[in-house]
Length: 290
Image 1 (tube, helix red, strand yellow):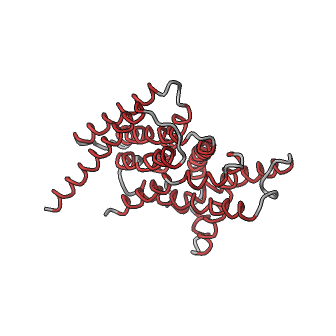
Image 2 (tube, helix red, strand yellow):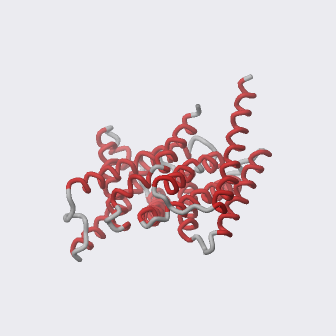
Image 3 (cartoon, helix red, strand yellow):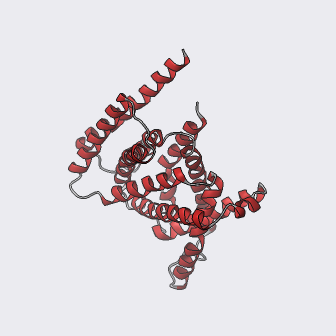
């Protein structure tokens, strides 16, 4: 299997299981969880860079242009984190999955427009089927699915920035979290000063989960950043269906969120589209190996 394909698959599988993890912190406000996530991710990545003796190389790779592009990436991913964590802990897992079903369509659009990536006929069939499913779901949702739209747009734009980013994945992610760490620390200290913070007033178990949150944040982002530089953005767009599929299964069968027959029809169209795309890829690789 292509390494980029493997890394992307692993990243989306981990993201798909994230609701199980963030529900462990349901008593903490989403913005504070995101702040801890930024800080502990930076700590984990900084330890990796120092341990592998890459700190000097990392510092030398930074200039104003690089800092500007990664600051945009940092802003996009921080918005995505806050909305996602809040939505999961507010029992909107099914709607978050809708956002990540919409997301691949935007990624494929970016791939064809900005990178001139060409789609084969079955790809168009797959995308058309997925688009119909998403439009159907949105129409029958009954209101503007703002959670889904914000998640889809911010992560699609983040993927676009990462595609053209000049640094290798470890350095890029470390720079993103470096941009975020001071604002996050300032916010957590402010919450502590106002008497509702979790920086000092929490138990060892919760602190352990928050620290592990830095690890589980860094790993899939590193895998995603590496994959984005090795495989076409159109393929990344389709593989992204792995995460929301896992999320919606958790939302329905584990967290028991409501799921109507209308929603089942819409999601089935999307799953059928993914099956077409994957089958086309398998057949093409089989023909190439003959």
